[in-house]
Structures are given as C-alpha cells and as structure tokens.
Image 1: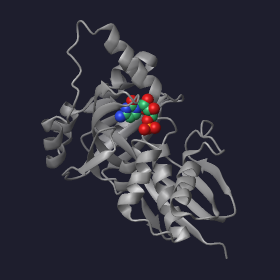
Image 2: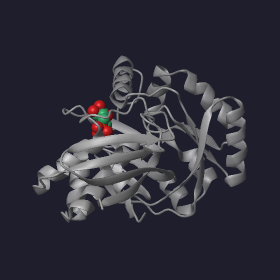
Image 3: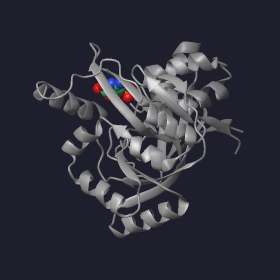
Image 4: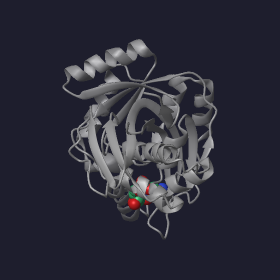
Length: 306
Ligand code: C5P
C-alpha cells in the first residue's frame, strides 16, 4: 500500500498590519497581528520518484500553478535539499482558502507540505529548523505553521504568540480576481513617494497598537473592530476601487468593521456573534457576492489521521 500523510493548515486574517520602511532587499519592515481562521488547506503527500502536484478544492483554482513553481513543490524540494532525501513527493492539494486572496492559502500549502514530507520521509527535522525553511518560502509561511494568534515583525516572519481569548466570528467576501502582493506594496511605496511632503514620515520600526493586543486579550469583537488597521488597504482599494463598495455593504448589514485581508482582495468582516455572521452572509450573498464564514483563532499546521 502507498504510504500517505495528510496535513491541514489554516488561512489567516491580518487584524492589524503596519508597513514600515522599504529595505534594500525590496521587503518592508512590518508589524502584523495574525489570526488563523477556520478555512483549511488539505495537503496529502505520498512517496514518488519525482515531484508533482495536483490541485482540487472549493475555490477558484485557475490561478494555481501545477508545475515546479507551485509553492508546495518548492517546499518539498527545499526539505529534500536540506535533508539529502533522494526521492520525490506526490502532493495533492485540496484548497479552501481563496487563491491570491490575501489570506495566506499558498503559505498554508507550503507549511503543510513541509510537515507532511518531513513525516512521510522520516527526516525528523526539528521544529525550529522547519520554521527556518518556512521563512525562506515566504513571509507568512511560519505563521501558517504555528497558527493561533501571533504578532509578526521583521518581514512578518519573526513571530511571538499573542494572548487571545474566545472565538471571533468572521464573514469573508471573496473577489473573482486576485491581487499581487508585490504590486500592492509597490502601490503603497509609490503613494508614499508622491505624498512625501504632506504625510507623516514612515515609522521605520512599526509595532502593533496596544489596543489591538488588549482587544485580542479580552476576546472583545467590538473593541477589536475599532482597533483593526491595514496599511495595505488603501493601495489595494486604489488598484481595485470596487472593494470600497463591498466594505460599505458589509458595514451597512451588521458588520462591526470590514478590512481588506493582507494585500487583498478578500474583505474580512468582523461580526458580534454567530447569528450576526449568518445574517451578514445572507445579505452579501443576496448582493451576489461570494461569501464564506470562518471563526478564529484556530490551530496551525497539523497531521490528520485519515
Ligand atoms: O515573502 P513573500 O514571498 O510572501 O513576499 C511577497 C512580496 O511581498 C515580496 O516580494 C515583497 O514585494 C512584498 N513584501 C514586502 N515586505 C514584507 C513582505 C512582503 O515588501 N514584509
């Protein structure tokens, strides 16, 4: 019988994202409050002579590459190179996190693949070193590994856990287009350059506002809704003005607040409770938006027994 390992890893919402200075390597110093949410990527890996990936799922899949550029294949190859493992991996992705949606679906695929391959191959790489590999694959990959609620600094990959209580109820409005993360960061830089005279100087070492930490600690959605912030929202709305209406529609139909998730285009609405989330889902669906509900925080990448 072919051996197979199944790992689930979650998508995320950034409840706070502040972008600092542009660094020489093209990245920015950021301060992020991440929350893992209950939309999971399922990754099943079995032994093979070479590396291949197949993709299925409940979200629009046309933008997912199925060649060696797929982040799951890159993750498996990276682990093989580190450990000297000589075989390959047959990787099956079942995606439930919107693709190029700002919710870390690709990052979840990468984190899950690292864990699945390490288990399948018996390479037993220590967790700290797996996190180091995760970091090489993308700034959000370490968080998909750890999950829960966490603060990310540096590129967003230097994590410290945040105290959080209770469960937050999210409604996610999915767009039928993607947004490129580098393009959204470039738009922010261009805006900052154009308006250098009349905006506050960029904080070179941004940090997460204390009211965000307090709201998470208290498990209070009203407090969190007031404290949520995303520096990438303005450039995302500039590139896709239609998202402004989506946010307004949600806020008129019971959301405490709506925020672009990461670099977008998914809009995450925080609601007071599960009933309000259901009502908002119905209202947005009636306006012909694709909507899913999720709760957070949830655990990071972990092995599932089939
Ligand atoms: O690390 P990741 O591959 O997810 O980053 C994608 C792109 O997002 C980078 O190439 C960069 O343009 C931008 N980025 C950034 N600063 C960060 C994280 C990402 O400018 N802290």
